[in-house]
Length: 324
Ligand code: UT7
Image (cartoon, rainbow, N blue to C red; front, side, top):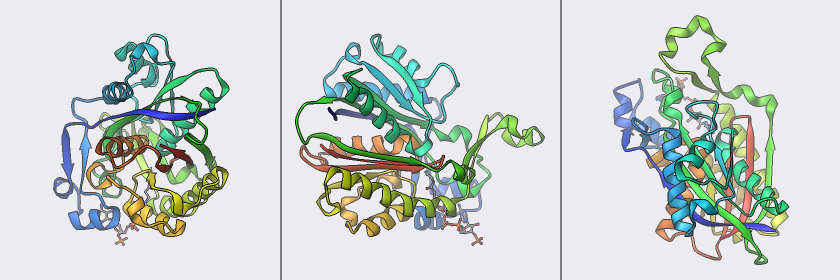
């Protein structure tokens, strides 16, 4: 039994932080950030929280799907920046939208989180245990950014995206294949260190619980090698050629990573929509944020062959092929 996306929604914080704003905060330049990453601005939460962004995105996805909160069987939120460890952000969303009949839980898989959450929903629905799910990626990465570290603070943004998925009886429709993997031995190249881990450096944290640490070059190399391999596996399993894919909706980490993947797959950049210039890297939120944009603008159409792929901390990676 396949699953299909019936509705999408998203939410971005009001405040926009531009590259020019960052020039005033650290030793960087608009030109460096745009050339090395493709980013111009990102949204930063002030009054919003991971749960409030996730809730707004979820409500919009439900409205787009024409469903009531009471219809929802399962809520899965992918996040690594929830306000508290317990209760889960998914349980907060459940309470906010009044989805009293749902089971709710979070998944932490960094930038692959949305993909893994979608695949988890797919496996539950295929098993017959549940019929539908709200799958949400939501992050407030600004809460764990060291605003004095130019190598990471320019890269990330906040936001949330959601999809409502349900079982699909129609042959050849919905998610056709899923692939995923993890390389735990490479976990040290991208991690969020907890405050407790280094009490000697407590001052540097100034009210934060953790900071982002990243060896950007290593993550870059991993992404441009592992992601095309994973996508090729998912394509082979679905019996689809890269040349027949209408849209590749990839995690928005760096425009150069997306260009390298496009080259390796032999598919032109016109098939790789991007919004990284306006959102930065929003980790688990990036794929559903972009999907919602494509859905609402009409760029993604019924019958399109779409590949989703996420990659990041863990290290982790995943891809799925679907007929929209
Ligand atoms: O979301 C999932 C995981 N994350 C990713 O996928 C990110 C993957 N990595 C990347 O996107 C890139 O590696 C970065 C954008 C993080 C960095 O780009 P890069 O081309 O690999 O630059 P670099 O780290 O090699 O740094 C080049 C230079 C260095 O100066 P020197 O040593 O050549 O003098 C850095 O100190 O750029 C310097 N630099 C900066 N300069 C201005 C680093 N950050 C900045 C900055 N502004 N913000």
